[in-house]
Length: 150
Image (cartoon, rainbow, N blue to C red; front, side, top):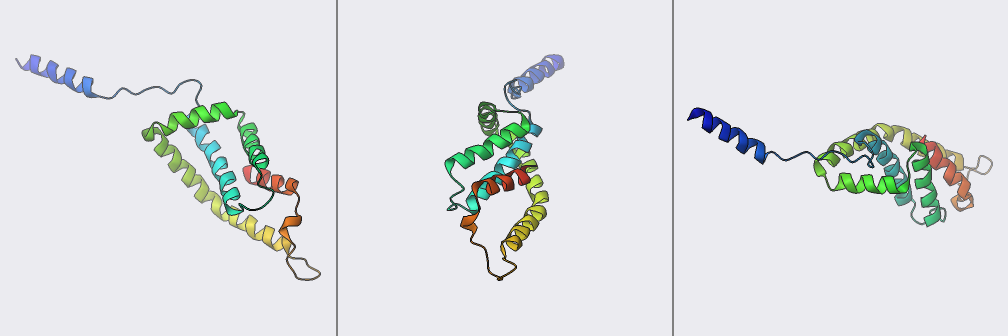
């Protein structure tokens, strides 16, 4: 009788264990997706911090994403598929976002220093006044995105 009860318990416990769905082949693995998300978060933060700058057109945002995708050898559809996959599985997305946050926290001092350097460069050494930031061309913005993404 004990053997029957033990077998019944084993069957019951294995039947109640959720099945782990494997990651599809057409979805980025977690570590790669986390690295891509770090760069995506940096790009989105740059746009959020300067929403009214004319450089932040839809086209320049697309260019920023294209730079990120090129850096990692992926495309938009792979990114979207991967995002949807991990978003629908919070148990898999949570460690990815924790890794993203850790990476962003590690980058924060470098980004702050770059911001200070950019602000310092805007000061006109001859007149001691700030240079109008609207005079900077879009390629400079693209270069600053490239610098952050490297």
